[in-house]
Amino acid sequence: MTNLLVIKEQLIGFFSRFEAYIKAVIKFLISMVALLLINSDLGYMSKIDNGALVLIVSLLCSFLPMNLIVIILGGFILLHLYALSLECALVVGIVFVILFVVYLRFAPTDSASVILMPICYMLKIPYVVPLTLGYVGNPMSCVATACGTVIYYMLEYVKANAEQISSLGSDAESALGSFKYLIDGLLGDDEMLLMVITSAVVVIAVYMIKSLPIDYSWKIALGMGVVVNVLIILIGCSALEVDMSIGGVFVSTMISAIIVLIIQFFIFNVDYSRTENVQFEDDEYYYYVKAIPKVSVEAPDVNVKRFSLYDEDDEEVYENMHEEFYAQEQ
Amino acid sequence: MLNEDRIELMTKMAAYENRQGKKDMPINSYFRGDYISFQVLKSALYATVGFALAVAMYILYDIEGFLTDFYKMDIPEFVKDMGVKYAIVLAVYLLISYFVYAFRFTRAKKHIKKYVAQLKELEEMYEWE
Image 1 (cartoon, rainbow over the protein chains, first blue to last red):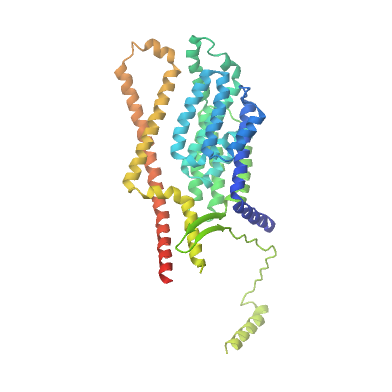
Image 2 (spheres, rainbow over the protein chains, first blue to last red):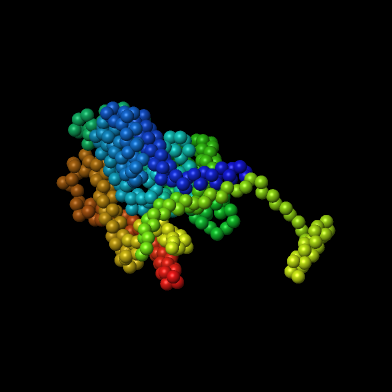
């Protein structure tokens, strides 16, 4: 355990010192993974399904704000869908704008989770995001998880029904009817509805419990988050007649909880101070200050010696201490 | 001479100005009521755009039926129906915005209060010299 704590301290020190670079690398990795997944899953427009382009765009993304990255990824998705079917791109585009309007107003700082949510779905551990957001976000973060969920299920639907969708609307008359088919398929998924509700409730539950002024509120919050997650899915499956493997949900929730525990231990449990580069001036000087947080690595060989004043064996020691003390006083 | 205590305080303040302060300062220039009503109004605009798009989707959903029935349709009834739905969506959206922005205002005020206290401390440091 002590070793782990030392590693943790070092990590925090490293992170707070090189925050600016690490953030850029993380942004680069997130956008590259997302772009590669979009290209491999949708890949209908061959022009943008191109490794070099992905690399250039992700390099660009590493310097852009998260919200802009979301828009760029959305643009990639729409371009692919446009190549598949104009109607499909139109419907998904409208849904994107509606989601964006809600999300931009309430949770503009949680854009990373909008991207991470679909990625986690593909990795089969979607519960990591709502559980983590309960800790680092606020109740409004449920908007971001909802957006991520809707995007994932829409893309899944398109991927599964690409052939039918591309044959839609070959003539003007069937084009009009195809909207009904598309909207039904894209938004009529009960599993999507269930996951939107579950993730929202989990975010709010974890947030509320972790803010309670009780001992171990962080641990209880995670436990309750897991229970709430499984329970809602169980109830939802029977109420909405959704076919989900309960064993799978349970295992995935457990794995998610373990990942959240690890993330919590290393990153979120501490309010780390970061390197600050600031400039200011007074009457006499200009100041260019770089403030680097001190890293205190706990010494691994902590020696705790216990003794009781009333223990017979220790009585002599105690008396000696007394005598020494009085001798010094006099 | 460099006064280390003062530099430390000024660094803290400058760090706040660079990060959270950038968000808090604009909020501080409003009265509470003004800020919240302005933000709620902005939310109303967003909600209207969202609702308009949702209506567009609703019409697209059954566009064939909509086009064939258009002349037989009871337009005032349709508009009234949409109006009621719009009002409900708007009310829910605005209520949530009210709470969110009231919270943000209170939080910003708290930060600013701390910042002002630091400013005073800085002033006192100068007076001591």
